[in-house]
Image 1 (cartoon, rainbow, N blue to C red):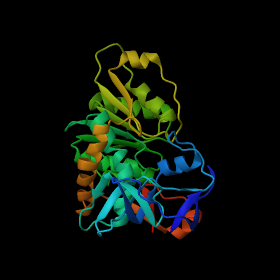
Image 2: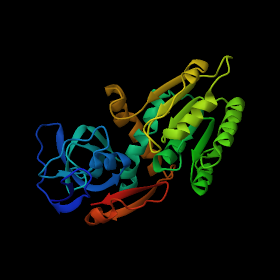
Image 3: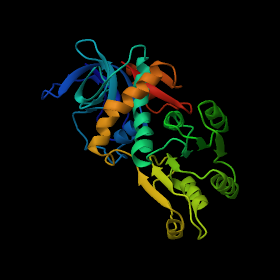
Image 4: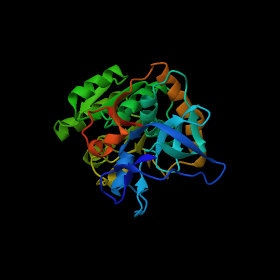
Length: 323
């Protein structure tokens, strides 16, 4: 089969001939791959920078962690890969598979799951979102951030505040369900002042943070209390596009009713992952098939994987490899 293969961490994937994967037990099935999204997770694994990266394989490793494709009986599914998925064939797990609804575009179906996991899992299981909550999404101009706006709205958020650096993309989020925008490129003091005013008028229940770094420090400083009773805020770290570490004052933790947690691989319970495949993904796929979500993709052919791996993708778009 043809596949996208890396032979050394940090190197570009090559489009080469590679042996077909072979099922080892009854829970493994062969998928004819049709579309695979390239996510920050995949890039982090290939570069060796993500905490889930495996050791190098001198014989090469097929890249990609999930896929949309066809089972032997022709059923269209989304599935997590056991073998790498950016290939003509991939091994997938029976219990981590979702049958796709009629009418959904396969490239859109491939683009969604990582972003759904990066938003819905945090909202439901870490933030425990309730109808009427006010949600702040830090770093909402990326693909997952845009999905988070739409998922938060679907889950009943009363007000959604979004931050980002691209002013044009920020404005477009108002059409997706955001209610207020905060520009990250403005002066720090002005940003904190604006956020404090928002928090005073409509207390923030949930923060979904895709950036971490300096912007997280600003948000946490805006939440800092002054010795009076404070509103509880559930702060969930999902990504670290602006830096992996922050300085966090102990005074902030003591002065505000703050729940600080993370959402990502390794932090979810088995029961939560089961619900991702049995409830959350089927529900969100159905919304997409009914054109109730806005999903932007940029499609590339698997043969161009090396050329396109580090290509600049416009804000809010997901690069999808078509096989």
